Length: 203
Image (tube, rainbow, N blue to C red; front, side, top):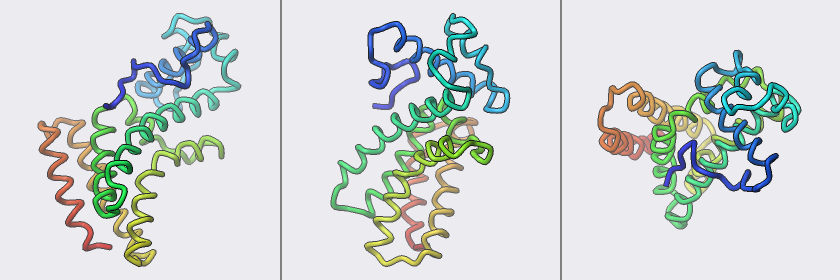
């Protein structure tokens, strides 16, 4: 089941006040990023959203980047938990796992619009730690691609071309669902899955 922004998550499950406030700041930060982006991200507004003082974020995070990194880590945990089910479902079928991991991406990011802005953030201005955390969002898909390409002796050039083709399908489908162009999510996912399966000829 895809988790909603208001669901509890294990990283902040402590009952003490400090942990509860950290959880509240992370969740408020997700909304802040969705509404204002990274360049206009305000710790003051984040604190205000959860009824905390302006000093509260600094008691839990070293800096604005530290809080953003924690937010990205939270989103990563949700996606990794979701994507891991794909690996468990298709342990002996790399081609099926390859297809299903990209279908899972469409479903996850479409069902969690408050996370999409975080996935699409430009990481060029991030520090090394935040860039590394952001790159985790692509780890599951790249793992499936690498496993398939290794077993089928696909060249690096063909792998790069294939990834570009399939990502265009994935991101395009997510955008179509997001803007209402694809009014039936299940039909859009089914159509994208068919295109992804046919894209194996690229590899």
